[in-house]
Length: 345
Image (cartoon, rainbow, N blue to C red; front, side, top):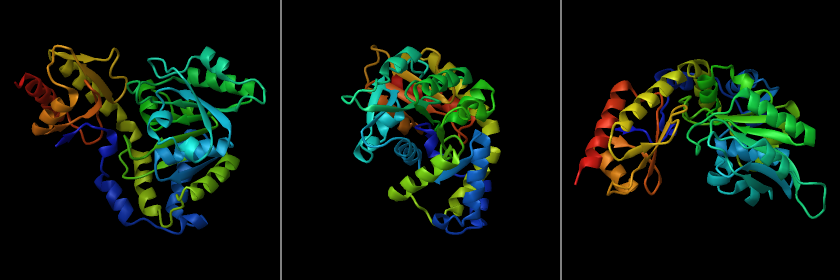
């Protein structure tokens, strides 16, 4: 089965499995797991921060970050297509009492600086306190688009000017760095905190890492414990993360190349419309034209019968994500499956 639903479906490589089997472990809640400590140290170094925290998921990392930055009744400014707003079960409000102020994401996933500036509340007891700005890079629901270092620095400068902090949801920030051809730290060092996923394009089985200052990570560690995320002999998982950080970032351009190949093939099929500029990284978004008599879910069912799984993200809309386990021949097979699925009566 060719699985293009997400890069979260990636399974660990043989090298990762071997590293997991021989991992040196200890009790991470006591700070005694050497493999976790090594992963956190490497992640902090790569992102340009003082410290890091291994967490179970990107959702936990974002939640821990926002709760470490904000108190109850504080406000966080984010995009209306942000993963934290759409897909994290309202955790910042339900568990942290943090209010969100959503601004319209631009097609490239950015927030307009004028919108951010106008969203920052004046000092008035009627209003929540504007405490934090969150960005997403790459941006999932904006087509896997990315923001360059210059934009991130502009947001950080604005935040500093107004006394706010900046958190970066960098679930796929390694893809952004690969697409831009810049070091990871160029995108992550300016912000106050960043979380990135090990279990997406980096191909590890479990986990994300949250990075920031020593003081911030100390607060986030307490939040992680509160959320039930204090893991014990977690070095078995961290070992795969170490392999991921050492071996995967340099090959992400291959996923991007295959996404472009996939887009080129799909553009040749009648009834399929790709988003303008798609793909920016490893995600291909496409919509069925009105002339196609099938809904997206029916087409997805037909595709599965041809050995291809895709993500349905709307009534007539798909997301296809390339990753480590997708090869060139899979791209050709996927294009062929779409032709057959849309031609079927």
